[in-house]
Length: 241
Image 1: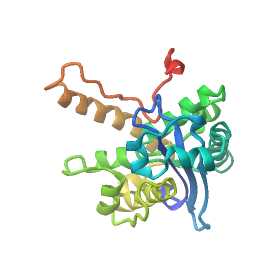
Image 2: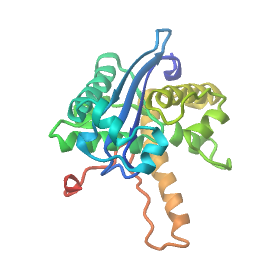
Image 3: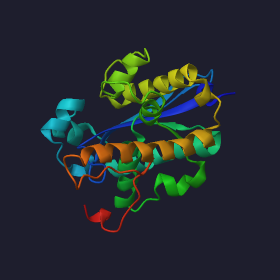
């Protein structure tokens, strides 16, 4: 059976900012869907470890500092539970993680784990971590299409309903639905094994980053676009940020 017809584990975060090395998790969702089984989801609203949520971030996802501090669960516990949920899906059931722009969400989770001295997801799973990134896939299979490639844009392009954009649970489920549509629309994707697809996306993401960096350097010679996928490698000094 093709990967897109099996069980998928959608993963999405809403955070305090755009830099995955410093952003803190505000809300999170891990949703299992497909495979002729009922949809099951777990969601988290955290206390952001007592930090402030910038107004521009709150405007996007709707969670203010006050809401997080009064209603959120301990961020350390949430990180541990999120990693546990994704590890369980991968190790016990062989379910791939579906994450829109996975480089961001998985790197945020990685750095949160390291802040708390936890074993990061990549170290726990090793080669068992299989990721499906609708963003990377879309840029590969339809590279010359104009327009945005946000989740909202991809949902429109692949005719996927998106209710409550910028809430982690809605976005996680929508990412799974987009991935399913991609597997349905492009037979060569569906024909790949999960290992083949994961490995291919590493190459695709690197090529996409190089192309974007070259374009940026036409006006900014020092421009840099991160090529690593699905997690930006940890460097000495990252923990100090």
